[in-house]
Amino acid sequence: MIVLTRTYATPEGSKYSSVDAFTEIENEFLHLSEPNLKNVLIGDFNAKTSTLPDYVIPDQHLLEILNTDDTQTMHYFSDYNGLLTNNISMQRYSKCACRPNTYGHRLQELCKKMNMYIANSRIGNDKTVGKITCNDVSVVDYLILSSDLFQMTKNFEVEEFNPILSDVHCNLKFTLESQPYTNINNVKTVEKQVIKWNNNKQDKFVKFVKEKKSEGIRDIETILDKLIDRNDTVQQNDIDTAMNKICEIFNSSSISVFGTKCKNQKYAKHNEKPWYKRGCKSKRNLFHQARQRYGNLKSKENKKL
Image (cartoon, rainbow, N blue to C red; front, side, top):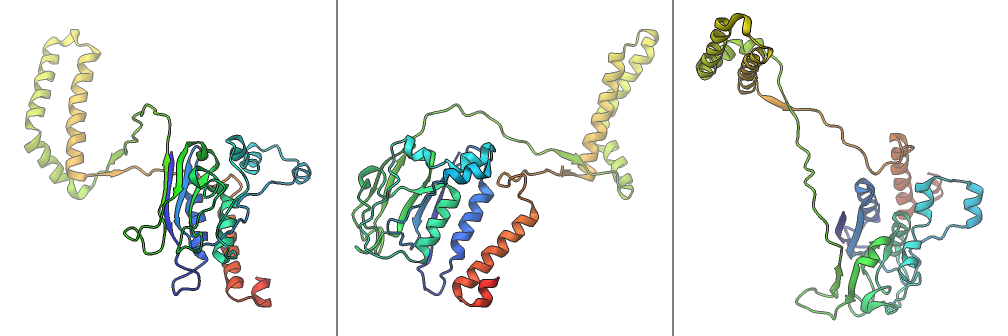
């Protein structure tokens, strides 16, 4: 499955600007994270990244020291190999002469954490170019992909500025191609159960059975009369048929009189590792809050937090 997210971050320093926007994006991706899910992030981030690296190549000595053989951990550290396998350059290019801003560093951090990579200057007509996307001055609009989506992404380009489409931004154009597959109907139905017996509605239940199920009751009476006549030749099948008719009347009447409710469903948290408990999530949020406070006001007190 591919999830495409359109993003806009208000300009840095404006009334509504906040570096929290990137933390929120990260949290959303963590919430959506699950096996075989591919992410596409595109939009105006107002982030000037220049040619900052958006990847981390782990030190081999560090991996040896950690001595980890966890498959998920090793896959996370080696995700950048997906670019090399598809002959995608790790080096980025940019015609933007602007210095990286705070948003640019935050976007760079997000890419590193989420194993996502900026497509600008790496593929299509923009390969090795890094064409300006905003106001003939800067690159702030990006297409950002999971590593294994680069092989599916075709014809990426930064189009010429068109005032009909935007005030100062150029349009980003790209195509995603995938192999056709057979769609398997795997729709999960919601199970319902009848609400328990309510003594306050017993008279209503009896009345409903008498008035609405009279025909069904007559059928049952007919079946029972025949069973009595047959006496010794009655089979288990005959008894089951009568019982099923009775249960059908009681069940359908209960649904009409008492109503139904959905059974409680447990939803798996796809984004969390076994060790990522509620305490970890709380500490992580506190860390981001402390980092934001220090970013807004670099004081000794905030640094200790």
